[in-house]
Length: 356
Image 1 (tube, rainbow, N blue to C red):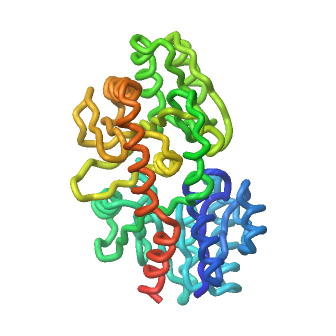
Image 2: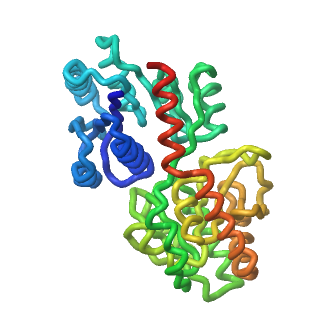
């Protein structure tokens, strides 16, 4: 089996990390795997792992780049003749769709990793011969909003690389207060955590908040902190550097899933990396009343865009350290049992084999 994976670039990010993990595990299984993308910080790691890479920059979405990329991809496909072209982002999927019009051999597979806000542009991801989604809620989104054929959609949870997170619990130092990790964009909902933290400071004056990451929304967040009169530490680095020092991680996503009994939601890579590290987590799901929070065996949940609910959840966590410590250990076990890279790769290969 010859597999091509396609993304805009191989820089730091959840989709890029998942693509690297998928390719690395396939390589270990002696599957002929290649990545097509622009440059990024993962390229040296690809070369070190012996994974073939074609440079096709598609991070800038212009008509000129689109036409040039379609022509270049057609040449690559004609020469390489892969069995599978698996597109894990929208712009590459449009390029692949038109490039594949000249190919009879290569099968077109797409992945959906989030709730896209532009349905017309996103409908390309529903055109795969198989459409892989990372949760049951995204399956409904793919069918109802993007027009995917229900028979073609497959649910495969993302896999998480357990190292180094699985060992970070033994290094736990604490004293870092509340933290969040991720790219600083508006849809991550970090503004609601900052508002919540201002409320928390009225009752827990020595509380600390760390924001680890960078991105286009950073100045807005810094201005919000200034307007609210609170001091927040903005830091940069990898999650693994800071998780051992955190007492609590908050992931206040705006676009999230709906709480449903018997359904395993996808709460995000950052949540599961924290849980592997035995850091207690507060995150968001739709279906929870505003101004409240829900305790599960593995995390505390609030409604999206709910500063009051997040603030109450943080205060509860601070005042119930033993209870959330047990929650953190349960969370670690849950991630180990549900989100291994091996299960992700095994299920993905079964989807490939379905259409070959």
